[in-house]
Amino acid sequence: MNKKEQETLHKATEKLSNITGATIKSPTIYNGPDNGADGFIEIRLNKQIETFGINIKNELRGNSFPVSLITKQQNAIPNLLISQYIPMPLKQELKKRNINYLEAAGNCFISTSNMFIYINDQQVTDIRIPAEGKLWKSAGLKFLFAILRFPELLNNSYRAIAEEASIALGSIGGLLEELTREGFLKNGSNKGGKMVFIENRNRLIERWAETYRANLRPKEMIGNFRFIDKSAAKSWENLEPIGFKWGGENAGALLTKYLQPEKFTIYITENRVKIMHSLKLVADPTGNVEILQQFWPDGEIETGNSATVPPLLVYADLITSFDSRNQETANRIKIQYLD
Image (cartoon, rainbow, N blue to C red):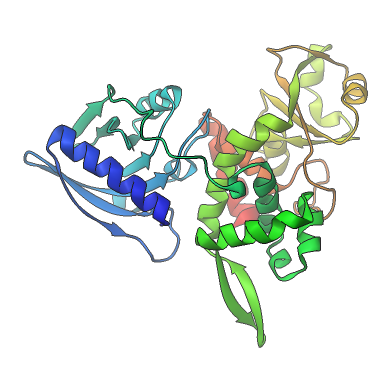
């Protein structure tokens, strides 16, 4: 847990205590093996006592879903998402799913067999904190995509990292420093030589997936389309992926044989018009075919299937959706390709 997360935790629990009169036991910060939890807190309200595993996020935007809350909780301890700010649509979705949350302003939904607290009238604008550094913006997310796929790049030249990430060479040093400050890099040794390794890899993957959905994906989005021939959607696997790769539900179906895609996701390298012509697509704002620009260079095929985008991106596309079958497919991909 970094300093920013500790500040968020302090603000949120102090505000909750002031509003409700609850006593909140000093949190236990989790520094053991990475299991998705940032720590534990105990909340006492009247005669009710409950312990929560806490997950702290700086700020959630759009439909960025807290990935760690999708996974099963350790030892049946209820989880509590704590964030500086949560958009109203996402709060409604969390409440609908019976997922506990707490904003720094004090707004919360906490529901267990022993406790119920629901606050939804506190102002939030005065306590939102400045945007995060460059690591969680477009260039930083491309950088993280590269090193999560190929961790050996951390021990290669800055130029090699920049080429794989398709970002400016001059940005690499600052991004590495920021990644270190956030606790995701560690120094070690391998066969007698000094090496740099990724620390808390699972947590970094989850955070990348959430922030990719909110910050980078919208910038790569070209638009929505539909097949002119509706029957093409049923025989999509027969379409030859020239100039594009399947992402999202299509990639999930190809890699796990678990999904029947309802939404079609395509990452392209060719001109959009050429792809539209070859796949017989027309623009449609409500269409179920979405086209995005590929933001990474072609290279190693990690899945053995050249028709799909890298598994990390498939995972991000699926785990951040609100569809339970997509999330289950994402977890299968994570176990098979990312763990």
